[in-house]
Image 1: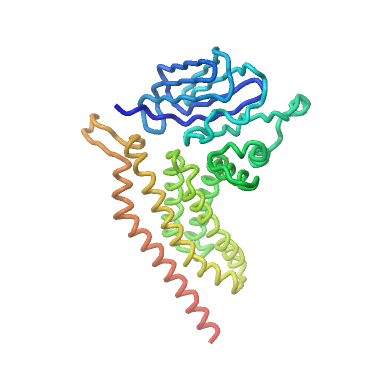
Image 2: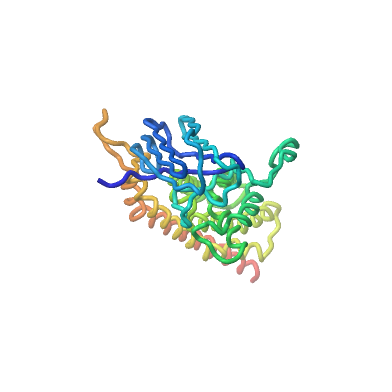
Length: 341
């Protein structure tokens, strides 16, 4: 029998305590065993691999008391450990290689240099990015991806947390692009509203797929996909802004109808990779699936659906989108050539 999987665990500390946040919903049968530097955890609940049993063990850097404070909510389990010796730990565990499921809890971290004076004046005003830079200077060397140089540590910590800190902005900015679809529908812009509707809806679906698959949150393909998504708009919206005023700038026109040749195929490839990488998680966890038995006598597995979609429907959508952009480019520059003649 294989060992039970580990849930995602987020940790933080202050001078006296260790804070653990276990990402396990509707947890039951929670059991914690503490013996100085050793912590063993087990529980049943909804985690990254669906509803089942989860467990993990931590070999802590230093001793803690054997009286942990446990608080279970519907969405997570909070564990508070009291340090025997009040001091700031350089790392949570003794091992130099941190397991993939153990992450920093940036929202609760309190630096050892934070004084009571700072708290009396309103607490911590640093943004997540500022905190990451400060922590990386001190503790970046304990990461498994340890390299020489402080800058790499700062970049690594930001990269590992970018989805958690930016996910709402991704959703908001993408949803606002429906305004562009409306502009095309009523004739304010000359863009095809139907193709825009498919594109914006598809991006929102991709965001939901990534958001509900924890293994994709710190993936390089996710980072690059978000970069491509929003880089495309840096060339598109300036063009529409000046065009709506009756102004045409050749450089903006050329960029609007040429930069997609590089960015659209890149985005489509990254989308396909993202979908393929998410298939095992959705297949095994059963998220967004309909298991048997049920009153309809019907089963649906979202992982299987994604596998079928990416091999059949996705290529057709990609071909349609690229063909549409190619026709737009040919038409635009053909008309421009006629005007010049």
